[in-house]
Image 1 (cartoon, helix red, strand yellow):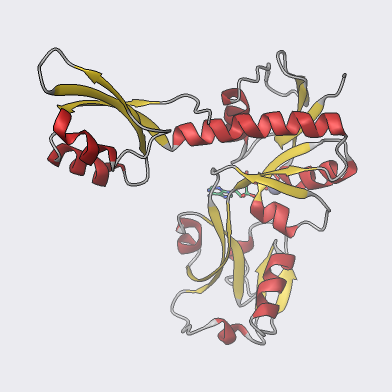
Image 2: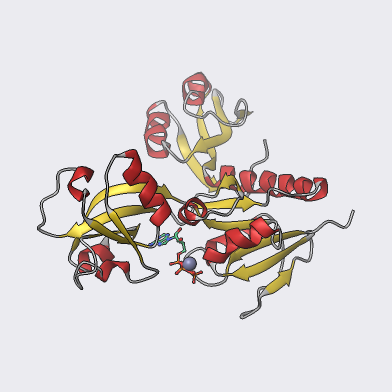
Length: 286
Ligand code: ATP
Ligand code: ZN
């Protein structure tokens, strides 16, 4: 089988570093010499293409690339026909409506009959239609935030993460219309061999993601506290319990979830655990 998977990533921008990091964490090695448009992996049948993020859905639809990493905002805005196969958890941002500060705002209905400048006419149009609002959409490709101050539009709809760009342009965020993170998109015409490689890659990505959400934990506790402590450690199966030289004490090894980490650590301490060590996990295979 000589199949090869071509993966398109953003050449330079907010998705680039994390996209390449994820591919590397999946154990795929490649040389990403600066300025390259394409590079071949040395230990996995894959090539990486470096493109502008907006062009990626088109290349994936055409089958020039088989996979691509883009923001959901780009995947959702495109009219290209591609599959979104997995959320990747980075480059989180939102698509929001902003209006000049000081202008009164009660609901999206306030924008009826008003004009909104955006680079996301499809996502915005869908949101307005769902809410029965009739606004004029001005499609512009960049520097959307200045549109109200130059009299081009009453409002903007743009990507926001901290909100500081809106603020510095005298705008207030009044409505979140779409939440986005990086996603893996795939061509709808993968061969069986390419699909098999994609499945292998997704398995690795999920193992990396699971490992990031969990930590390895070691602690000492009285034997009598094992049941109570185990309640807060929904590890892979049951924890490993090893006897200590001190009578009535054991060493317990398990996995702890990142989400309610501090809450559970406190409960584990109260249950009698001592000498708690928490260690990052590189990969987690289940
Ligand atoms: P290109 O030159 O490739 O077209 P771009 O200027 O369109 O790049 P970037 O600003 O690098 O794109 O953003 C790429 C993606 O990163 C966006 O489509 C969005 O999904 C996400 N993103 C945008 N702004 C932020 C932010 N402030 N924080 C986190 N993620 C963001
Ligand atoms: Zn772009």
